Image 1 (cartoon, rainbow, N blue to C red):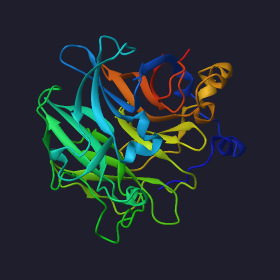
Image 2 (tube, rainbow, N blue to C red; image 1 turned 120 degrees about the vertical axis):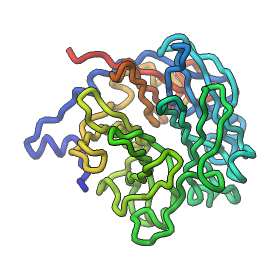
Image 3 (cartoon, one colour; image 1 turned 45 degrees about the vertical axis):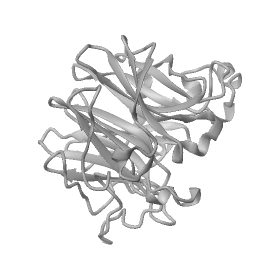
Image 4 (cartoon, rainbow, N blue to C red; image 1 turned 90 degrees about the horizontal axis):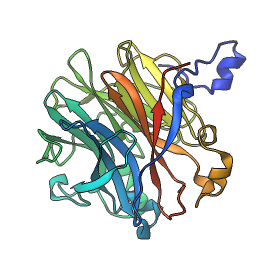
Length: 338
């Protein structure tokens, strides 16, 4: 357990802030834009063809921004290069897909290659009144031998992990369900499913559920991984070049990212900057000329590693740099520290 403080607080305590990751990011441009859609949360994987496949949440612009909870689907885009351009190929998970067993609006995908299989995790909800959708969110898992499918759901009722029934587990009774999966094939052979939850009256925290087999069961750790006082979101888990288990999260209200490092994936050091505010990578003039400058935040970070080295970061953006009405998926290059 650790306390999430602002980076300025670390400096005030006399500690130097490690900016090695945030300072290595360079904005490249828009990865995915669709005239009639809001794309969000692009998760990359390298296919056997050497191309980059992005699994992207998207929903119709005409339904409004909040329709990610009611009209979302997951689509696959392909590019020859990590920096695009990316071309739409297919819808992988439809809204109210029969394979999701009565669940709705698949959102926030995470794609990982595990041995010879592809593992796609995402969130769905139980439908009903809009105000109650968040509390019914759970995590689904689909598995395929090919990026073109067919995809096979794992778990029961279309979910691999739902709100814990055990009241001794920290995420029992979460008012936002269990959401935003960050799946990791742990070096010790187990499978870690990091997730976000929030108890009533508290802030959003990160937890983890662990399984010995890919198909589960995924057993949640009793305590949250974070004792943060400020909001965190959107974890992405990976192993860095030094063998550290890393978790990249966002601070949505501040518009910044946190990078947490751990030896075992359960006990993390104090975070360092994962990424800065948008205006550190994109000029303020460019932001001011976007469709929605008030939404100038990067979110839902998803990382591409090549030969064990992180090379690109994909982030969702509420602004539109090209004058359109929808959101963007953007790509950032990770270069070596100077």
